[in-house]
Image (tube, rainbow, N blue to C red; front, top):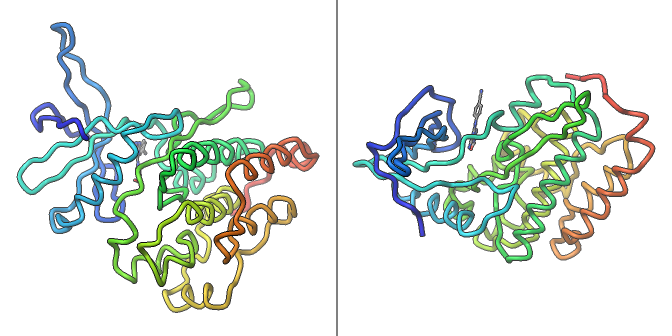
Amino acid sequence: QFHMIKYNDLKWDESLGQGSFTRIFKGYKIDIRDGEKHMTEVLLKELDAVHKNCWESLFEAASLMSQISHKHLLLVYGVSVHGVKNIMVQEFVKHGALDLYLKRGRSVSVSWKLDVAKQLASALNFLEEKNIVHGNICAKNLLLAREGDPSQGTSPFIKLSDPGISVAMLGKDVVLDRIPWVAPELLEAPDDLTLECDKWSFGATVWEIFNNGNSPLRGWNLDEKRQFYEGFQQLPPSQWTELADLISQCMDYQAAVRPSCRSIIRQLNSLITSDYVILHATEPVTQ
Ligand SMILES: N#Cc1ccc(Nc2nc(N)cc(-n3ccc(CO)n3)n2)cc1
């Protein structure tokens, strides 16, 4: 279910850092099309050989996503295996991960943030209709293809990245460290990944977007994070009550009462048309 790419058809360029268990590089893929040589910019995601037993999970997650296509889902060109190295070849997304983009202090408007949240909600709605669970929704896995420029009237455009290694394959500490993105019910039963889990993570991701990419519960240790769930706590609410309501509906400890994607999209639409947006056109960046 994956296109196999020859290792010799790949060229590595600069290193772009690392995700969990993976190293990412900018690179190029060489194609010969109608007798001409084409170089396509790609993102090369190398899986550490030491985690070889997880590469099935990584590729399974990515192949799930590559079986369907949607404008807000990242395109995966294929995989390349070279000795102990497993490499996933993805479309190169111009501005990289959203959490880093927001942390770099770009002051973006409330309507910019709502636009990004709505794009994520439409990607989730598409996955929900196909009954596909992502399992790792967070700002780090949202890639910014277009910055959007209010003066030019262009809006941002995001792509949801592959979920990476399934949470069911990860150790307990890694799952704990994913609090508050990981749905609370997964702590006891990591295999029970459901569509409702993505709704919880969506809430935490919207919280990140409206807090300039700052990680919720940043600096908390694993025990403090575990107690956050054991005490049924919520993230600090936004002063915009309608937004805070949507986030807390998504982050409901009872999975069954979390809102459907359609309801989420409806509520985002009413936020977009509310006076708050006009009053807070560009928030001063509070770091
Ligand atoms: N400076 C800079 C810069 C860095 C990356 C990109 N592009 C890109 N394209 C992708 N397909 C995936 C990613 N990712 C980044 C983190 C993760 C986590 O998984 N993915 N970045 C563009 C600019």
